[in-house]
Length: 318
Image (cartoon, rainbow, N blue to C red; front, side, top):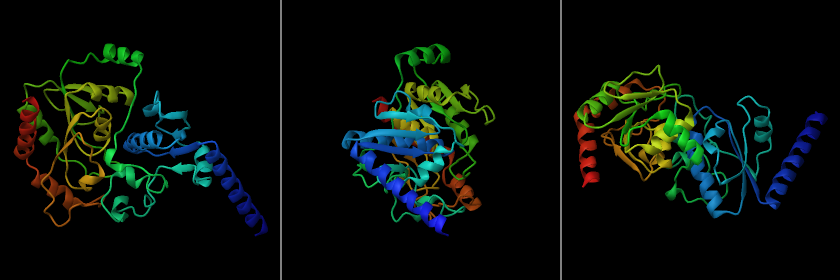
């Protein structure tokens, strides 16, 4: 018992001392260890805000460090693997100058998304950082990825991209929830309707292949980001590609099936296509709701989605 108390006192002393030392010399540690890739992307918008509005030297720990290579907002970038002991120490040393990018409700439930437990509809980036005790302008969120000139030359040679093209993907990541997805056949109908466009499908080789597309599968994250940076526009779901599109302010036709409120993933470059705000269960929040999947497919038919895209493309071209 005495040993436990003594250990706790030492831990608190070390934690307080370290946080004060970091604050004294204007250092700020931010860390994120997680499998949701999108979280690491939109964390960049918070780092951008802190860098621009607070005099801090940011030390970043991320298991998806690739997104932060060449980022001028980062003073030091650390690349521990997902199982490294460093995550244990960082979690136990959290304080004013050692901050975890994570929602306070992220482990609240296995049935509902953590945003359900926040009192108002907010962006995911705000939910993950509102405990930072720093003044952050959440209305001007913009994600960032930076390429070197050498990378750009290499990617251009490797990928052989057309001058103008649109991006699409056939499905969404299902390990967390299946409730962000619309339907593969709907995505195929979009491609079929706009056959005059060069279409590139991004994703993994085990995902359904769309016809009349060039397929770029299993690219590393930075190559994916580069392809997004070069496209004319995207057709996506809420998730990884939406957050990447924000980095380059690419016009993004986001098919929203109502799993989360629009406020949670919205960026200025989004054109959100939805038809679900009048149903009682919007937003859904439930990770495994079969009823939600049926509703979303019925409410958003192909002709409705195609018309929204066509109308906005006509406006853009004028």
